Image (cartoon, rainbow over all chains, first blue to last red):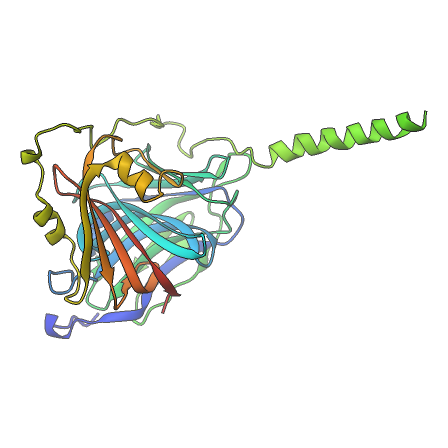
Amino acid sequence: MLILPNAYASYIGPHGYVVQSYGHTNYGGYFSSPYGQTDLYSNWSSTHTGSFITNEMWVGFNNSEWIETGDVDGSINGNYWAGHYVAYQKYSSGSYVYREYTVGSKYPTGTHNFEIQYVGSNTWNSYTDFSKTMSFSFPYGSSNDIDVGIETDDNQNYFLSGNYDNSLQYKNSGGTWYTWGSATNHDSNSLGWYSTFSSGKVNFYH
Amino acid sequence: MKLLKWIAPSFAILLLVGVFGFASDFVPLTHPNNGHTYNENPGPLYKENHGMDIAKFITKEQAIKKVVIPENAATKSAKLETWANHAVEDKIDNEVVNNQIAPNREVWVIKTYLPDGIDTKAGFYKTASLTSVFDAQTGTLLESTVTGDYQGRK
């Protein structure tokens, strides 16, 4: 990838994605990330505050509402964060809201895992490293799609070669968890980034 | 006899509706890795500190400065309150439970108006309002909310 000097740093629209999807009804998702924020590099600075790159999972209800969790390097609506986070977008009372939460402390290292699941009564829980972090109320008793991958809004951001997520799983209505047997590639970017899927693992390349 | 002819099937239908009606929302709480013990009630990372000397907190000015915004944005309010009060006032209490933060943890809630909008991870919000919540003791960003006219991912 061509690295441009800061003077030419630019935001990209639409955002760039390298994503694999499980596009079936589900009641939760899980993935493990061996590198997390340590393999993500953003061009965030005090004069370039919108820049971010994530490695995360989205559990979706429709095109505009979902819960997401994973790691970010860069902007949380302008503020810098490097580490775990949870966020959601919801339509309520005639308008949308997008809300992000930091999880734990900055700069976590090593392998971490993330989970979102439905627990009944319109309640969805998120977990990081086997510990519940948040509960959300959504008027949906199932998800129609799980995506796992990388998102960025800046062509100067990057991830290290060899980055991957593994142990991609979904939960069925009976509460049983299964490793993804297959996935649909939803890579979408102008950066030359791409992903592959095999046996519950997604590999990222640039 | 005619009445009995209707009672039995009606009861059967009610029973079926009752069973499947309740069962359709029952999804057991399970986890993919049985070998680990999940913590469903973790103790908060940000513990209760209501009543602590406010000299140990970041100041209002410091909290406002933490919100990174463009020049034409305007700070609308800055308030020191407990996390629980913020959740009620901003109508989040019926929507979100954050297990990391004790209800009586003091936070700064900074509200900002962004007339030119903001591009979020979810897409662009036109004429947006940004609510930033910082832990008063450590200054850590806890929660960031954007509302406005959602334009989608562009």
